[in-house]
Length: 353
Image (cartoon, rainbow, N blue to C red; front, side, top):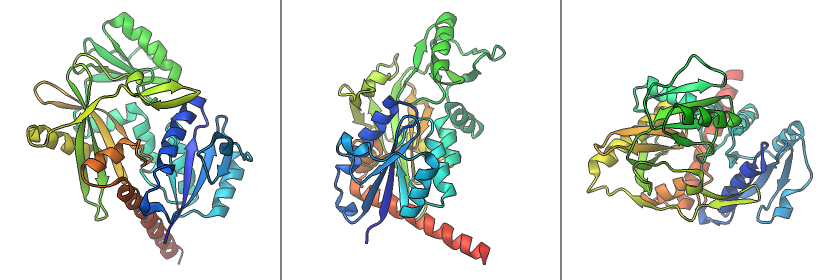
């Protein structure tokens, strides 16, 4: 028996974020996983400006521009549809707000809660939580717009990044105070806070974690990105295009860490990834990006709780390396969300009774 899955995609903020979300949502829609053939898929499209539309097919752009609903009308329509769960494909800073909407509607969804998602979407909050828990992060500070009291004292080069942007948008490596001030001004174009971190020379590695049905965490194989030890991954290393359409950068080069030759490093990175999952209050899955120094020290750069579960999604690739097929991973996440929803309903019934 299949499930009624509401896919939430798009962005209320801008065409660029809308295009990225659509790319990932279409990746899942075109995957045609055998495990999902009995599901009924409904697509709720959030357009720049905040209006919603609904469709059962997102393959063609024309299907996205149906009848428009303002938010309260859209949520009433969603309640009437009564989906079994929601899967969010939105990547912009508003993502946690939509999780909160579905929490209010008592509709379960795949992934972390609105609170955890908000913390992870904010690099300053992520940094504070990891630091408080004793996990390794680069030395640095969080700077607010107009804040003249907080000063970075970590030396150069350093990395400046807006707190609430993804895919390295607005991220710059700086080599002196003048460059740092200029980079901060540019970062403040994306929000009121920015992080300044000491640059960590070395390798860049990603590791994912998934929650098994038993609740036990499974750390996935580690993926390394091709990046010079004295450089950082930039937007052009991740995505190509802009408002008119986005695709993953063809220039991206990755390889798997050898679990025999680098067994100790893999174990360390996986341990940090699992600890970050717990500290940040994640649900179902998470990913971290790390820098690894020449001596094997691991520093967490950021966490990520986005996955559309199509072939383009990195979590799907990480799980695949561990022998978990994309359709199997997606089905597991769907079942987990539906199960949480059932337990929440049972708990609510007991409390009201």
